[in-house]
Image 1: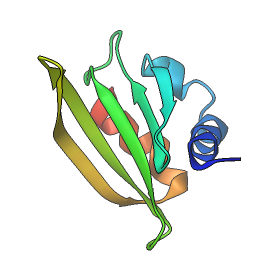
Image 2 (image 1 turned 90 degrees about the horizontal axis):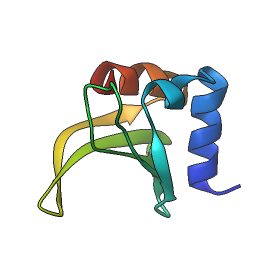
Image 3 (image 1 turned 180 degrees about the horizontal axis):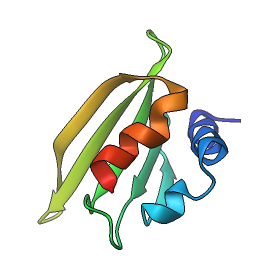
Amino acid sequence: MNIAQTILSQIRTIDPRATWAWGAKDFVNTGKGLQFRTGGLAKHKGLVHVKYNEAEDLYDIDYLKIKKGVPTVVHYQKGIFADNLVNVIDMVVQ
């Protein structure tokens, strides 16, 4: 199992409906983590990039907006434990 699959599995184990609630789609394995697009009724409509920080054994999350084809980080969170992924992403996305 690669890092992206592990992250998605952890999110779905914590809350099987979380990705649905975020309107998550277009899941991409970035090599260092998982990236997906949020939409629908979500507050944050854009990209969410969950990256594994191997040195700390924690996750870092970037929230990006795309304007004129250029992604820009609008919010980021560092040092997130796996069991807090859903709650932390929920606070920004929903």
